[in-house]
Length: 74
Image (cartoon, rainbow, N blue to C red; front, side, top):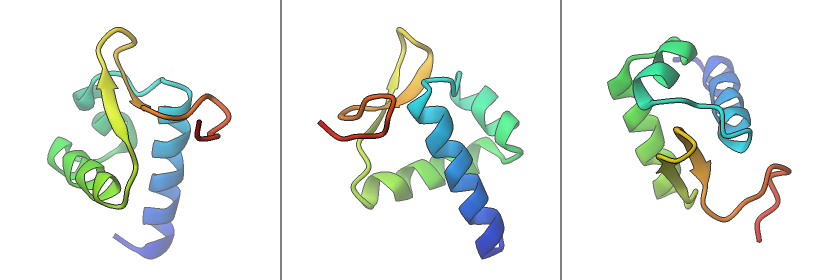
């Protein structure tokens, strides 16, 4: 994956997580145009970089545990 494509993909991931609109892991990977395994690898890498991303079953979306919709940490 090229650097520009990866940058665009990470931006889309962040936007969807902030809006709490990812859906299930399978649906999110499909919408991003990547394999589920690739989504899990990216998620692991983001967590290793310090992002506190969890799956919230009540909203059926990945969310940042410590951020609001503006992306501001609290």
